[in-house]
Image 1: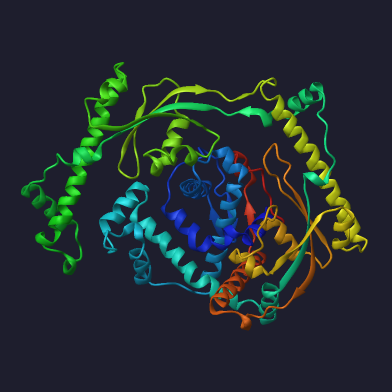
Image 2: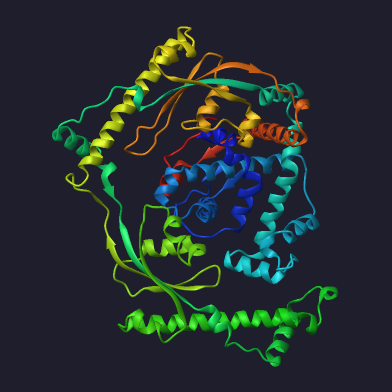
Length: 553
């Protein structure tokens, strides 16, 4: 597990950790995958700092919720497949290492700096970009987080942002910085050969018995995913807004409440200055109450046995649609064509968890919309009958056989390269396409300025960055199930210097950023050696998210 964390510290995820994940941990949703973990008082211990199972769980759920905002619904099974628990554990380890180093250095920031950071957060600003304390309170209420706890966490996160990089860089020897400079700027030129399906023998169609056996042995290739038919509708917010009226007495009462809440007298605004904002808030409050009341009334009628379609005509309902989706498909692909694209994650989760034939329910979204969702029918996941997928079975069988032949040929080339043969000569021998990639450095990889093409992956280029001149590296393009893709064999043919003083201003900025990232990652590894890191195996077994872990002291 320690090696995983070290690898994670060199990954793209880790390089955005200090600007992203700390705030994710502060601001994103609550929940629980741990019901009770027994008596151990920690899950992770870094030096004298302990992380409880509850703290790990909150971090896990917030990070998972953030990823769902970007990637769509993620089940716990998918989270384990993505190694999300391990990533969260690595993040918490790094955060605590930084905290230990900052304490040892007596580094801290004042309250005014933390307040300035909070005031610049767009979540807590109004439409004009000004800080709005009411929005802060509303946001924290939705996150179920007390203001004091938020400020404490933000204080620690701000210290880590401001001080971790300069401090860690200062503990690294100058010789290392110079060596890293050379490594980051070194350009590498790569020669490649492409092995495609046409480079291996043509296959004849096997007997039905062979295909049936392949079908039986690889049934996961022929699964028809669960499909759900559903109905969606929405309470028409705009229609209700037109009926709302706010009188002067309500505005006056709202202004009195504003005065009671305000603690900073010099910043208190007059009634006239606040009128527009107060009226807007009142209208939103009334709108929310009316929409909630309509939702409750309709749900009560549904409970009495009435159908939603019969009730909808009596209320301001719009966008009544019916469609289908597969739980295993990306929900965005299914929902982008309807009016609920912004609520994809929430709706997908609601429809994925609902039972078939229920009355349906209203979902209040983060955007203040009330959406009715109902699952009408569930067609369960099943393996397609062989008679229906016989041709697909032949295509998949052929793809697997060709890929095996392509990989075998690639391995043969690797063995010949070890004997001193030149890749260009081997391309001629085996009638393969030979090409040279444009030179690139580690800095180019960090910026995404790398050679592009089928089969060229970041892993392939990363291995070539670490390979010796003349050493072969294989990349397998997986392609579609019925498509064998291609196999690449690459080799480093030369390296040359690309010093920082030859770069443009933009390139120098990116170059220094790459050096800083590497220095920080190396310093974290240095810090790991100074502090003991322990995991409570009993707690991790109870968590069930990952296998039991132990550290070498």
